[in-house]
Image 1: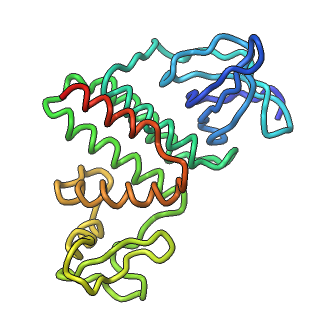
Image 2: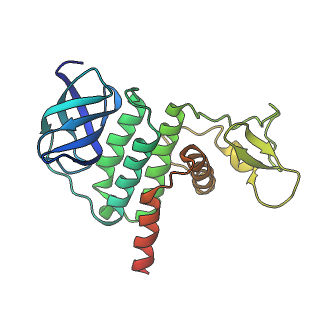
Length: 235
């Protein structure tokens, strides 16, 4: 890679020596790509372009320019953006393009600018985050089959299921806990242009939390912990 122009967002950075930073960059062209930047760091959630050079996994970044007016998030919008960035940082493979996720991330960041204008901020956030997870997990390779269980039998409306990262939906013998078959099947006809209904949001919130926790292993999400602390202080 030699002086290649990349477009995207800084998702994380840390100090490196006296005047440099190691930057984790989510780009339209290569997905997550890491490099050393020897200039001032722009705000997070800000679309930028830069030049990338180098053959190693850690590139040299230079000539970073901001693409639009500065974006500053506060409160819930900031924590949502922090959550999206942390998912990308911890789950994306390096230099593997994720065009659908990139577009959904860009859309999510744009929409978070209007959070304070929403009549129901909590529902707006739920829809936005679940849609991002839906796209992101699908592009990571977890495009789930909501019609069949782990034995390739049809999901039944009146049965209950648990989810396993390796096996999918597993039929439960017990009557308590687990996902209702009707909840699982409700995703069968879902169209991405639509909002999730209340039942789907509840189901996906639990399902994706379990799936993401399994993928993260022993790496808990700091954004989730800070979100909880933030709301505890408000109450």
